[in-house]
Structures are given as structure tokens and as C-alpha cells.
Image 1 (cartoon, rainbow, N blue to C red):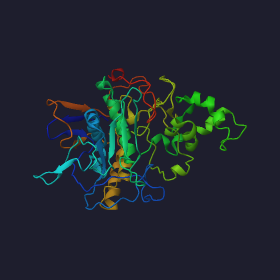
Image 2: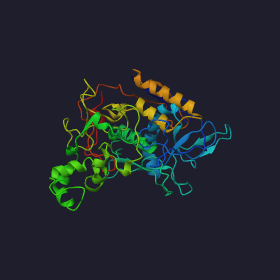
Image 3: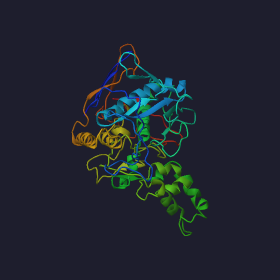
Image 4: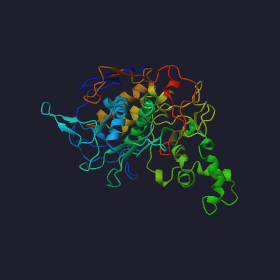
Amino acid sequence: MTNVVDAEYGPDLAVISVADGLGLDQHPEAINSSYASSDTVEDEMDKRWFSVSELPAAGGSALERWVRYCFHDQASANTLKPIVAEVIAMWGVTYPYTSMRIMPDLKCGSISGTTGLWVPNWDCLCTSAMDGTAVRIKNGRSATYTGYDASLGYDYSRNTRWRHKMKIGDLDPANPVATKFLAVRSMAHEFGHVMGLNHEHQRYDAAEYVTYDCKVLKGYGAALGTIGAKTRDDTAFTADMTSEERMARVCTDYTLAGKYFEIAQSYMPYKNADALLSHLESGNAFDARSIMMYPSWTGATAQAQNIMVLAKRADKFPGELPYIYTGGHPNPAYASISTWDIVRIAQLYPIGPDDATTQAAIRRATAMTTSPRGWGNHKFVQPGLWPKLGGGKLVMDSINGPPPPAPPVDAGKAEGSGGYGNDLDLADVAA
């Protein structure tokens, strides 16, 4: 499929051709969805990993559940607002099937005297007047940080202000054109986390579909050299275990990885989930082109085609190359939300107002997963989100862009681990 996104820039209206896009009704009473507590999940629907717990009431049959954001400071807004706009367009393909909306904090907007609807200010800055539950988005780019990370889901377990965070560091101000879609893809992935999705490659059954090579992760050699001394008194290991055997256990045990090799926590399947992960659920088919997959080379010791942390299994993907890309395409500019991503958001954010309506929406979304066109080519309308840029047009293609180059096109460190070893120049992958 080719999903061309045409954005007509104007002072008040942007029309973006993506998936089944509908105009948005604004509901200032709407709420965020959500992070599941370990003891309460909805059992009537399949869900994917971090699922919804009992939500606070938010009246009306036109309920929307907002993933609210604000910018950490003006510099972050200036740099990342265009990236947020692109990401809203990407996730907008879910809107016809879900109650999820990416919106600014309620303090950033006003009621229109003409329409009576709430008009958002998309340049929303975080202030002390807010309740502090929105996702605080920060431009984290620095000499030592070019990565990306975010909190998972809506945290009901505490009332700490600004506990929901996102940091994006892979937009290079010295090279914004080349790194723009890296940042868009990264932020789309991080918003998936904020909505409540964990990594697809960490499903309990992921090992049936992808291989995971912990030994090629950055830092493995150093960890191997010290693991014997560090674990001498740890009862999780026996005295006769070699360093290699100890690292093999660390690479597959979430708690041990947190102690001795933290980067592995972002890759290992949760097959033997401990108490920390007891509330996680998965649903539907494994999705190798999900926006929640890591590229094969992210976190690898070197940028080389045959050095892959994650790879497709040949027996599950016959006739396909083993390479994995976040959003399904080697060029970040063509990454997109997959049909299964849509289904999972539909499950987490029921469209309501009753179960029959929700199930019908999920069936419609699920039907797209077997369609050659996927979610197709449709319009998404959001007033005021894009600024006027001389009447120009933005064109964003989805999965079937130009022929992919020889991989790898992405390498370096994972979320929260300090950034990329090499920033990708899009000229290397452009047609």
C-alpha cells in the first residue's frame, strides 16, 4: 500500500490524508488512559501488554480519552512541536476505531464563542497551574544524549506531579532535515509507550518469531568481564557457573538484568515474567512491523549488516529478509502505524459508549490486518495543528516508499541509554 499524506497548510486548518481520518469532536472533560495496576485488568477483551485499569468516569456518550501533553519549555516547543504534529497525524489513523486522542493539556485552550467547542493551543507549555498529569515533553538533545525515552502508560499508583515524561534527543539542530523523521519515528514509538504499549519484541511469545542476541549488545563484553566478581554473593547464581553462563541468565531475567546489564531489559521477551511484570498481557498476532518494534541493529556493538540484536526467524517469515524496522520501513520517513497497532489501541481505549460499539470497531480494525491495502489512504482533519508555511504541502508516505537500501539504516543505543552511536543521514536511504 502507499499512504500519501497531503497536508494543506493554513492558519486554521490542516487536512492530512492518512487512515480513515474523521474530524475530531473536542471534549474538555476527557481523560487519559492508562496504566494497569497489577490486580485489576479488563478480562473481556484481548489486550497488549500494559492494559487499561478501571478508568475514572468522564460523562457523555461521546467520551474521548486524551493522552495529554505539554512542552517542558519554550525551546522544546519550538523544536518539537512540528514533530508532535507529524506524530499526531501518524496516530490519527486509530481515531475512527478508538477513544484515544493526543491533545494538549486542558489549560492550553479556550472555549470558542462561535462554536462553543474547546479550541486547543498546540504549542502548550507546562505551567504550575496544571495538575501535572500531562506528559511533559522535553527536547533532551545534548552532547551526551541523542536518544529517546518516555514513561509507560498513565500511572495511577501515585500523585507525583509530572510523573509522565518524554525526552527526545535525536533531532539534530545542526541537521534538522536529515534527522527530522528519525525524531518523528522515535516520538511515535514513545507515544505508543505513553498510551500503554510495551515493545512488541518483548511479548512472552516473541522468541517464537524473532531471535534475540544479547551478546552483540553494547557493553556486553565489559559486563562479561566483571559479572563473576559482581555476582559472587548473589544466590541467583551457583558457584560453579562460568561468566558466560551467568550472563546468559542475566540476559533473560528482567530483575537480574536490572542489576547487572540494564540495556537487556529493553530486549528480552517476558516469557518468565517475575512479580514486576505480572500484570502484563498480550493479544493478537505477533506484529513484526509494529511501531513498537526495535530495528534489528539498535543497541548493537557495531553498525554492520550481520550484527543484529533482533532478527526475524526464517521459519516464521519464510522468504523474507531477517531485518526488522520500527514502523515497517528502513527509511524513517516511511515508518507508519501498523494495522495491528490500531487494533491494540482500539482494545486499550474502547470507543463505546457500549460494548457492542466497541467490539464492532475492533472487528473493523481487525479486518484491515488481512487487507492488501492495510488501513488505506484517508483524510485526517485537525484544525490549527499545522502553521501556515507559504501554502506549501507536506507529503508523507507510509510503508511502500522507495526501494529499501541495504541495511542497516539504524544503529546505536536504545531508549534511555544515552543515544545513537551514529546519527542516520536520510540521504543514505533516500530514493
